[in-house]
Image 1 (cartoon, rainbow, N blue to C red):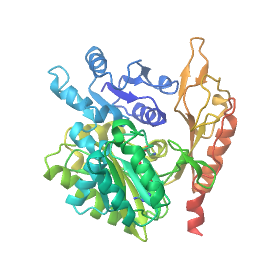
Image 2: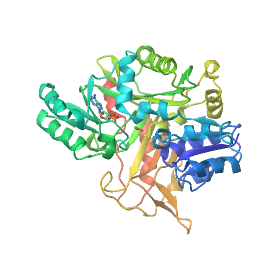
Image 3: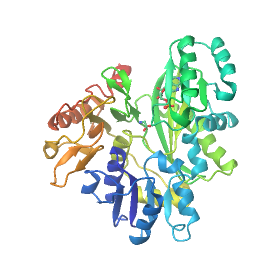
Image 4: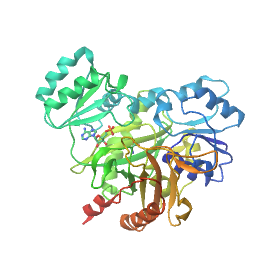
Length: 429
Ligand code: AMP
Ligand code: GLY
């Protein structure tokens, strides 16, 4: 099959790396890709939301299957665009249409969906400029801390946890009246705070059947010990030791099955990944959020742990045949450590030459924000730049190898966390 992968992050490099191992993968294109994806396939400089040129590329290169990495093209309707075109309709596409992508694109939609299907999630109410005063009054009664969520896509920044009612009121006004997140915060959910430990669970579904991929935990804060501001993700581990068989049984029965059945019952077609952002409260799983795609950096540990052929899985999803598929996982622990630009997630430099990539021997190097200059040099091109994935018999051993690889890769002011996964190791003792 000829495959087009849409996206340009570490997630896409890891997916491209895995796709390329399949005998079924002939030509692999990545749009727009990065310096890492260029080593496994052919990068095409087309933006992820330029559906017309992505479609033209599919026709020119006789693409059989398109995998959409990030959420924005899904929420903007890449699938709907392909389905509306005579020439593109028959191409297999992994990713839901606009309607299904609302699971991620609208937190109000997903909250109502979960409530309709009895899926455990924090209690919430939604407010807009039309009932802002009601929202402020509601906050007066709310227990602290208070979770405020922009309804729409806000590049992972739309959730604010306010320690006090007074601050929550200011945040609510700021989000709705001052449009803190633009149109994404025209509606805001005021949500119950859940206390627990988070994990990411991934399913691939054909709309009726599903398979589970390895679960993972990501580390969102910039600083060691989960301190400082949120980032796109500073590292991840898989498997997650507390997600044992009995916990995962609850996840499947209470969350995954009702979600997929709910989509089916409501006539919402869904071919693609569902990322369940979960929190373990006591011994029970609750849903924090849905995403309509794989996680980043979770994918950088999930893909290496999948022993099965990814192209076969995707083909089965696209043709409604996931019911007869088993996914094999590698039993080892995998960790990934993200190297970021100094200053990230605030201001940071781009364009710094990266050294030492070829010295990393005992780990996988996935590029996130990198590019190759006209003179052939690999330079930083984003906040999250490179991630180093390694295997071990346990998290500690894998992390040592990830960190050894991370230390070998250098550029001006680069930074990484050295404690990815160690909270889970502590939980075990
Ligand atoms: P989200 O963008 O929905 O993933 O939210 C970002 C982060 O906010 C999550 O990863 C959680 O750490 C936190 N969060 C979101 N909702 C809640 C909640 N109801 N209770 C506690 N923490 C939450
Ligand atoms: N790692 C969280 C996300 O991809 O949204």
